[in-house]
Image 1 (cartoon, rainbow, N blue to C red):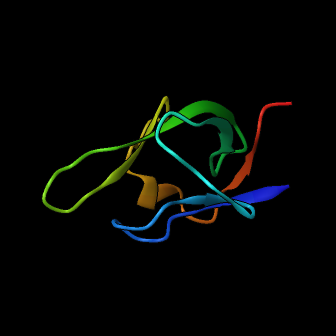
Image 2 (tube, helix red, strand yellow):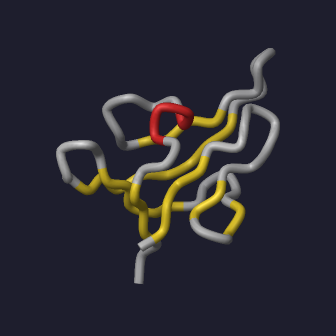
Length: 72
């Protein structure tokens, strides 16, 4: 199993060894053990934030270190 890593607002997030790009889809596991279908997106705001679409707390930094997996 891989981990989702938030590498800061101006760096790409990673899933295991793979750098994620806008629109990439995968599953991520929350603290309760529930899997969420999600997509990563980036906004060009002043702080260049990464977001996960499809999860309760969309800021990518909130999911740093969580278990994640790519779709088969």
